[in-house]
Image (tube, rainbow, N blue to C red; front, side, top):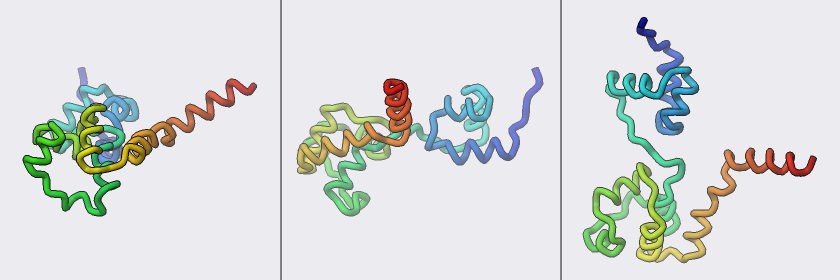
Length: 143
C-alpha cells in the first residue's frame, strides 16, 4: 500500500479546524480516515485536546465574573461544588461537559440565579447548526 503525503492545504485545514471540529468531521473534510488524522497529529507533535462544542462552565463564570481568568480556585470551592481538581479543570477548559448535578452545584456556589443558569444552558437550542435543521423541518411540514 502506497503512503500518501499530506498536501499543504490539508495540513492548513487540519490545523485551522482542530479545536473547532471533531476528528471524524476533519477526516471527512480531508477525505482520509480518522486514524490517519490521529496518526498525523501524533507524528507531528500537534497539541490537541478534545473539546465540547459549548463550554457551559466558562459561561457560568462569565455570568458572575467580568474576568473569570482571575478567579482563584480554592479547596473550599472544590469541596463546595463536590468536584475534584482534575475534573474541575477539564470542565473549565471545555474538555468535557458537566453533568446536570455539577452544573447545578456550580451555579448555586457561584450564586448565579436559576433563571440565568437555565437561560445560559438553553441558548444552545437555537445555535446556527440547529437553525438550519429547524428551517428545513418547517419547510417540509408547510409544503
